[in-house]
Amino acid sequence: MSLVIVTEKRDAFGKNASYRIRQTGRIPAILYGEGKDSTALVLSKKDVIQIIKSDLGLNSLFKISFGSEERDVMIKDVQIDAITDEVLHADLIQIDMTKSIRVAVPVELVGEAVGVKTEGGFIDFMTRELTIECLPSLIPEHFAVDVTSLHLHQSIKAGDVAMPEGIKLINEPGVVIALVQMPAEEKAEVAAVVEEGVEAAPAEPEVIKKERAEKEPEAKE
Image (cartoon, rainbow, N blue to C red; front, side, top):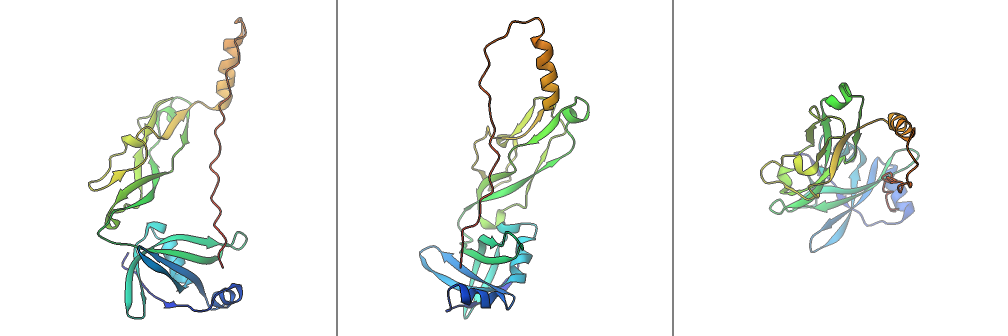
């Protein structure tokens, strides 16, 4: 993204100052940089929303300009009001375009698995992001993962995804991205049939998969 955001430093802090800033269509922000003190800024809320909704989302690279300075940055975190969905605050991080960084890139499943289409299974989309390391200019929008050839009980793992040149996968290769499974009700029917005429076996421990909890943004000003 070639977007350049013209901003300014801010010297007023606290809840009242942040409220007044938001009333003007802007939001308070902080810029963090390697080996440098953080800088308090004011950003256009419209510009921040434009970046969040772009193809690269929070992985978007852009420039900010304040005074005589211009820096390459990315959004590190945003605080959003849980009730109104309004953007309240943004953290930016300065980027060195010559150094590799780690980012999470979304995974998109492509095609309809044969195990779903003809074998009665369903796709369990287990890992929706892959963590990679690369130069900022090489960050992809997403990874397209073709699941067409998957049969029942087959899976695609992180190590099966071809990484473009210059991009290093950080996830363990064995991490499952997508798995074709049998619906729960069919599993129960199969279990009932097996139990008929067979002595009861000791119950195996139940495996419980925790749902991923969304990380709540830390309170800002």
